[in-house]
Length: 368
Image 1 (cartoon, rainbow, N blue to C red):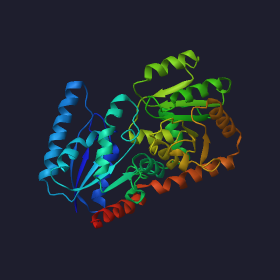
Image 2: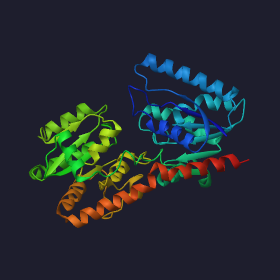
Image 3: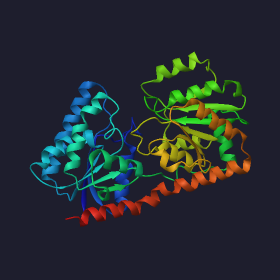
Image 4: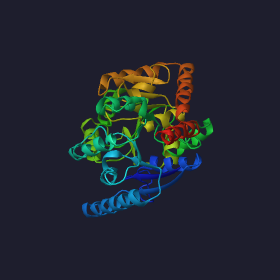
């Protein structure tokens, strides 16, 4: 079998995390013995550069679809990558597989809303759909009435557990020194884009309500994004200057180091399109329990009092209550939460999802 991988998101030297799940997916195709070719584009900057990159991306995709020797055309991020394939499919029929990820199915702005027509059209001609989680599998089924038994689950290339794992105590102490974090406090972490729907406001407001407990808690934020100015203003308005430690977007290795410093990870997503939430699973792989919104994909894998806690999305008081509860539990309970967090994450290990990916391609190959 030979596969053409098409994606408008792919990492490069300047943006190593942009579409990294597609890069990992390609690596996994190699591991399961599938030959592939790819048409991908890196992150564009500026309107002119963006238009040019998309034009080249679309032309190459169209030509490879028509004239390349491929058994399957596999599309990542359906809304923006599908246009040339929809057009080429009128000329030549091929097996098409669409891997949906989030905002390609659940638009979060006007531009994404306008691109929804392409998602609907490409799904109509697809042999199968791949979703990152059961939550998103059900969502695609409801929204597009796509047959459930043709929607497969593959959790966005999974977790590299040779990179993300629980460190020893001495290693963790070294990471505290590396990031200049205080010892003896409960380190509460947030990792994510500083953009709408990520719940960073809820995180900050919870910290504000716990201002009197700052001797007990240390709040750490990792990430960057278009709302950073709003974040800085909210921190200032709530007199939290000096109380929130902020770090920019970190590479994967540094993220693993940081997760191991966190006592508890807060994942306050408010996005309906949160199709998996890899950062929460990465944290659990490092033995860090998660407090997450009882919403979207995390609702399915966070278990109250087992591997973390859930709270109503956007409910600051409920998040504060979870944090205060965590601060009162004994060491034995903490260790059990950590152990269960790791156990939950094992399902997502790269080594454990390769067989799943292989099975998906077997079923696609056998489809007439």
